[in-house]
Image: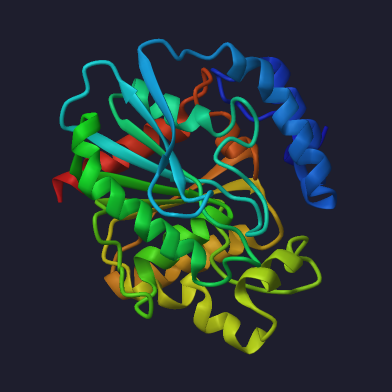
Length: 308
């Protein structure tokens, strides 16, 4: 076994998962759909028996008029003025759901609810029905809802952690950074971008080029202007950038580019995490299992952000 495919040493990760992720390893990018499903299948039994007691879940609360403009709410028992985490799922802009399986992405919100957060899992309209900047505009509506209504559910609207994965990370970054959209992260305390697509491209290595085209449009000359990385300097929020070791092609490069541009603009580097041994799906699938490295890093980051 090469160094690159040796199981990563996450002490709390079950040996079966370590072996499975190592076996997938760099093969991830050769067939993303196949290995994404394989990763989901590997985590399914662990997430099915993950702790959920004491957390009340309200489904499909409307924040807009469209059928997909809904959110799920996760409230820990006794929550009062609790911090809030808002999670935005991925799906290459043209697919995906806030519950891509019975357990995923609920697992992310359950984990944060277990840490005392009120969790919000956001659904949004998809391309081509809702092309750029539709995802970010839906997120803006959802965050307006959170700002106005979360206190009714035990959350503090002044303490909001916003997390986006994959295409959801695109919408999160656009909401926080793109001055043309006019939001610039209002209602949010801190930002976490997990395996986010921060630059639009139709390069031959991009397995989701069709989704990029559906969302960002046919005119590739507009892609730079519409890419969140272009506007990183306008982001006013504390940011944590996370990527997996085995990513969809170039997403890890764009994560580094985004972090670099933030560093240049601010004179200090943002938090950047590479999850060794993980792939684009396992980086979120592992939440609410015994492995808590990324979650604990995010909690530490949010605590630092609140103290600023």
